[in-house]
Amino acid sequence: MIHHYTDKELIEGLRHRNRSCINYLYQEYIPVIRHHLTNNSGNQQDVEDLFQDAIVVLYTRSISQSFVLQCSLKTFFISICKNLWLQRLESKCRLLYQADYEVHESKSEYLLDDQWLDYDSLEQQRLFYKNLMLLPNVCRRLLQLYCLKISCKEIARMLKFKSEDYVKTRKYYCKNLLRKKIMNDPECQQYLYYDGN
Amino acid sequence: MMETEITCDWIDRYNEDELDEFEKAVFQKQMLVNPLLRSEVYIDASLNRFLLDGEIIDLIGKVHSVSHRNAGDRGRMTYLLIAASVLCLVMIGGLFYLLTSGSYERNPPAIQIESHLSRRKADGPDKSTGLEKFRKPETYTAMSRQKPRHLSLAAKNFQPMEEFELLVGSVTRSNPFKLISPKVNISITAGAEVLFSWQCCTVAEPIYLTILNNRGIPVLETPFVYSCYYRLNTKWFSEGVYYWKIMSDEEMLLMGKLTILPCIKN
Image (cartoon, rainbow over all chains, first blue to last red; front, side):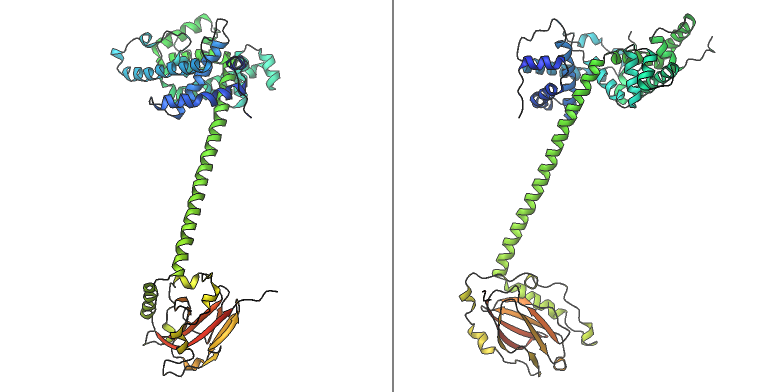
């Protein structure tokens, strides 16, 4: 029997990254997203990507102190999806347009007002996650532990490495491996030759 | 100064601010002229930010697993639908086949019998080389392969056919064909086997049997028989009156009557 969640329960569940809440959101909202995207030049993969991005946005919003839901969660979620998809379409056009470097326009002109809806950073997260999952399990854990500022001694103990130096060497190796995977990923080509800050 | 080699770990150390002043100056100078290094440094910095946010990674992982599981369910459902559709088509096809073959057996088209007989004629003996050159017919009519249809009205099946009654036991050829068994008019119980045997020396060409029901419709044609006997299995025959014809080279040698009586069950 399917348990029906209220909007409040869903927000609370999402704050705790509850899998059954995510599953409920998926089953309830995916048909609407699919319908919207198939009518606006999207495919099944776009539907999955957009759902993931919208969940990340909703999660980020839900954990902020200022978040107050002023409409139904479904309306809010679908509006996030629609805005993200609009950005995605504009980003596609922008990329085509940027093929001529001499005449490209400022990216800021295309950004929407909502600070939470940064499609590029969401896409980047998605690509990084995809490539992170391609790494061996030990590498993945090592990088995550290292970035959480856990000491090399502790990491060596947790991952059963023989020394702290080996943790550092292995970390350089894993990071380099991940970077190379990202650099060779065709979807990540837009981040190469980046001239930003 | 350019002799200093920039290794992969410099990118990490640059982003973690672990390079000394000299290394930093060399690295920044190199970055100015090398866009690939610049983008690698940018990706590394973005990666550090991404890896720092363990909660987002966990959330993305859960979303992935949810969508994979649902996609798997969808895939399974699609396969089930396809399998169900195929099964339905097979069932409809089977039903259609049964219906059409049933109607065919009930009213076998005469033209098909004729064409079969003419084919048999065309496959006839090579006079120059004798009997050994007979080819077995490649195909037989559906009647020889399929069960004779059981008629619902048993009494109707036992009404003799006047025209054939006159011919029972008559030899319609000058050739002295000698039948050993069975008698020209026999009655058997349903499912019993009837042994047709004859003197081989009285037959110059291979023979075949045609069984007709009491309405004169052929229900079975045997292949060419090269030996001197043929066992007729009546397992698939419904009760009633039948007439058999022993044929050779498109000529009837002998005609007989076969009555299949119902089995008496205790």
